[in-house]
Image (cartoon, rainbow, N blue to C red; front, side):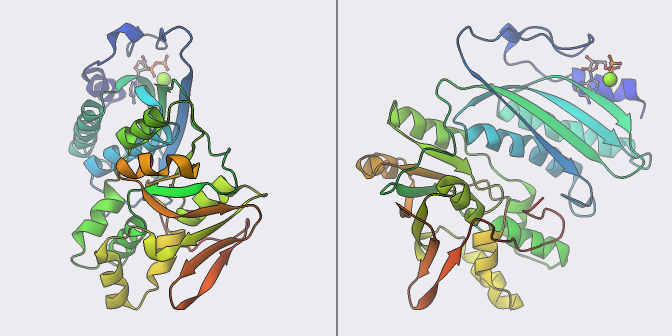
Length: 323
Ligand code: ADP
Ligand code: MG
């Protein structure tokens, strides 16, 4: 398929925010943001054989994921997504149907989250498929990773370990465990969940991040070098299939749960006074922030696990959380 045909697939997408201005077709897009409204802007790359394999990612899965990982970054700021650009590098051996399926999947995702495709670039790749999405949103009150204080409650929304477990299944070509594979292939950005908490807390303090690089990494980011935490591993939401897979394959599920990335669950720190409000919105308390390191992960009947700020990551092949 020629570049012009590919661009015409992108040009077909609906616009949800026409007030933003000029989209695809000129040298660049022109956006007119709301005056005085802060913007939040993120980019995530997906590279074949680094982040995914074409063997088990359908083009529609890949399109979904490429947008979803960017949406999750905006969710973690409590931002509302508006528009994105798409950089696409495609090897010669891709058939036209693959490209059409990619754009059909991307269009479904764009429609679902009401984001406008306003531009991009298309080129041939001598290596694998490369997808670079850059996503813009608006954020009345940006929620940063920093700002947690000793005594804060640590809360989570979503579950942990399933995406890494799903990747293990896909890499090993194991049959079954569809729920885990779906978690790897089609992560769900928790945009509404983040905005609901942010709006409910209003001017109150909220430190927020998405667990794109795993629960352990989220805790490191929220604690920074000065603070520590006491976390109850038994309270961490985990799909039962994660334990079933670990049992069936002799793996340690806690590697997936603590270090596995790509779950895109949210982790938040709030003052304990606001915890009931967060819990009413479905947030699960996992532990509390302490005045000093270490980051301690406790489990009933087992020795505590300590994470330091330089804790390494488990390697799972493509999709590896450390990348
Ligand atoms: P230029 O030579 O100025 O970079 P292009 O021919 O690459 O222009 O692109 C023409 C138009 O198509 C531009 O508006 C560009 O933003 C858009 N475009 C190109 N590739 C993509 C893509 N993969 N997705 C969305 N829009 C694209
Ligand atoms: Mg171009």
